[in-house]
View 1 (tube, rainbow, N blue to C red):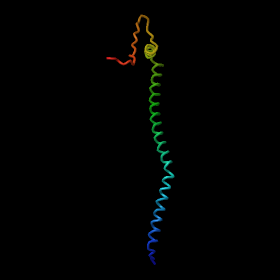
View 2 (cartoon, helix red, strand yellow):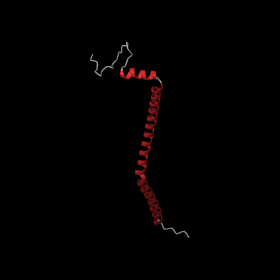
View 3 (cartoon, rainbow, N blue to C red):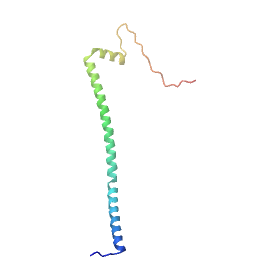
View 4 (cartoon, rainbow, N blue to C red):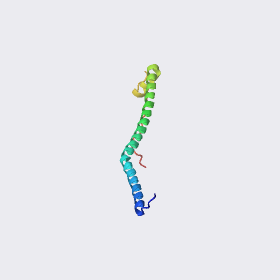
Length: 106
């Protein structure tokens, strides 16, 4: 048997719908800070992954330089000449300095 309650039946359905929407909204608001924190952490993970890749590349370059200095005497000589300004007897060392940051006045 289907009994027509008139306006009360429609109000009950509307109230239930509003209650459902309010519940979903409450759950969404409850989890919103968690979602934001999760997004921040994902961005931090991506940033740290990029930094790890950069550091790995630098590590490989340094290992290559160490191997070259351990095995190649010419590499040691070149480094001593560049960094320490050493020269063989009878050689003249000429050093070039980079210009200062003084602006040119015209």
